Image (cartoon, rainbow, N blue to C red):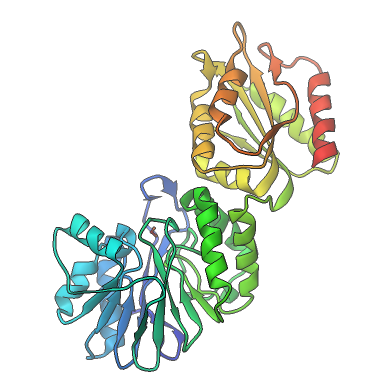
Length: 396
Ligand code: FEO
């Protein structure tokens, strides 16, 4: 049984959802599932844009077969070789052996590297075009968005940008195909941000390059490889990408992440969050032992100010905090105002360790000297925290 939707009269979504996936890329939880999008252009030359993840093979192949309705597949465009989109490459080619793979030179080399097989390939360069009949595809290279060989494809006939991983999100489609069919901001923006920051957050320069190239196109539809198709209010998601790619906060406020073993450091973090809300300053507050780092990384992009509070552990910061900070550094967060709080009963050293881990961050400023507690905060008010609240209030 097939399950497809039309993007336009002759561009058909033939992808599929996986709602049983525990971890995307073996690290990111996806409680709302994951969509693996693929698009079939029905023209004189029928053309498939990317394949799909191994987990959805059956549905994907049924969708192609029913959409082609007896026609042959002429071209298969491989926009990048990450296996969540290329795993079923040879499943498709075995059914449509006359099909020509359209890819760039780097992708062609990766096909051999991953699959140890050759394909009948049409190699394209930046700016090359391919006529399908009514539709003409042009190819725009977007290295590191999110692998080095990535290219996106633009169909001038329909104004459709097939954007590869760009503009994707975590979550299954659940029958909706277009972003305007759901309450995107309420129900999906957080997962779009988490996807962006964790998947391509490090590559803001490269995302900016792609946005610049795309700005000269007349784009009516954006078709990503994960998540919803954009056909309305495209500037909304482009503006989000401009913020994220330029490491600009979406919200003047504070992301507080703490690591606490027996709750004393947690009390300090709670106290700080309460005092900030007293002053009308928005915060998000995370326990690093509970919340997966990807969510905290995403909020580190979202907010202007970051506060990390950790108990001392093995002469450094608590293991969950160390992992989180390393993850934040790996994803290239920059331009933040930061404060550090440590707790330690005999040799407090978490703050120094946190500073050391965060040292590679660019364009960040520490709001004050590191704040240190000995075992617990005992008073109902703490001068050091009040001073930090004042500093945040004056800079937020
Ligand atoms: Fe969704 Fe870079 O693969």
